[in-house]
Picture: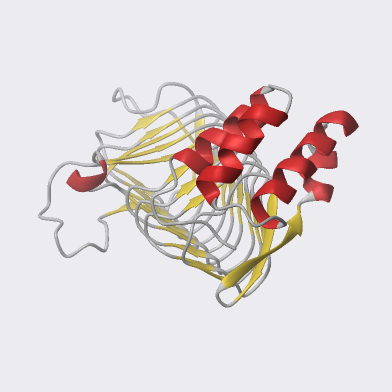
Length: 270
């Protein structure tokens, strides 16, 4: 059904199924598709070109960017599952070109986490995944089916999290890291590292991920040397960081690796 809403919430012609409910305060961009029985809340903003399947619920102070695709049954922008939450106004921001598959759930933030859950661009969040309150996800992330992120988790750009993974609250997963299927993650995972197990333990460098992300061979060698200092020597973390700082060529990737280790709060996977 082609519908032009005469109120201000539908900015251009969008395809809204006759059974969908779009509350009057919602802001719907150009060329948005909203499928059967989906519900769009009063304070929701949806950017142009986004496609929303059937039986999707988007509510709360939720802003979704351009050209996203949200599949059947997803629940986006609901109140957080945090007993300390007391109904305060909190937010969810989702960027552009994300794919959110069937029955995924993404919650808004809490006061403790700055009142915002945030997801970047070009991410794939597969079926039955959960992104809890106050999580911060970067760009180009892959989360496989039924992976669950607890509150306040940070996932950096181009990380890959396999299926049926559980990630403890406040954990950070570094850039281009990979987590194997069925893993239990209770400590930070440094960038470029491959972990697996229950609990997750380090099993090497994510060489495939580095190649796929265009990391040059010389830089891969530097990352390999950093890995040896951290995991294949008798040095503790502070000593390994000092060694890397002294011995390795400076690059944005190595500097990010060092910064991640210096800011580790929960300890790192070993």
